[in-house]
Amino acid sequence: MTTPLPSDEQPEYGVPSSDLTARAQEGFAAFLARFEDNDLLDEEATR
Image (cartoon, rainbow, N blue to C red; front, side, top):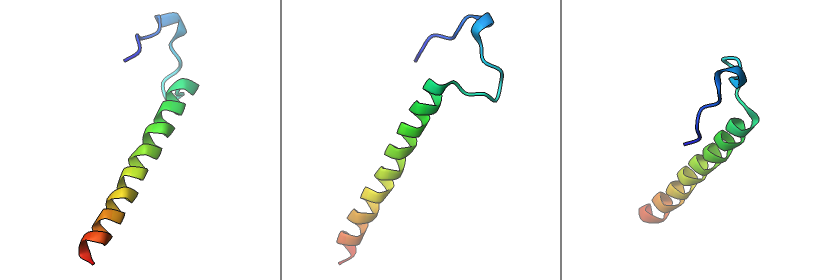
């Protein structure tokens, strides 16, 4: 976890920082890829 910013550097609520947005996009891509991998394994198991 990153340390919180000092109060004078806190972004407004509802406005994510670019770093947080990039981390969220990477995590979401990995999350979707995991489901696609599971779908492939399920298809092989049902054959």
